[in-house]
Image (spheres, rainbow, N blue to C red):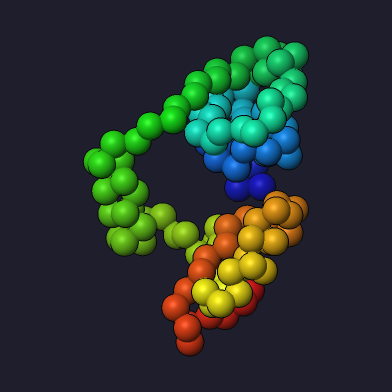
Length: 123
């Protein structure tokens, strides 16, 4: 683990499923912070006892500003954040059905990127 098993200072939960709701608590460090960005279709189970023991703070957000998006774009464009490690599958647009099937199986995929014809390299 990149944190030497200490846990992350801040965990952003953006997938909105039970698996990641569990992981957000597991991967947070003691006195860490969780920011829930995703919207859940079904309320997740969250281990509040572990959160209490680890003194984890929880906050939510649902809105971004134009400046937030520009900051993200700038970080990606500069290479300061490498998005390639987050992409589990690259598919051509005509394989959109397969891409949505991957999305339904978060244990097999993280992020699916649809690319113009001729640029795909399924990973």
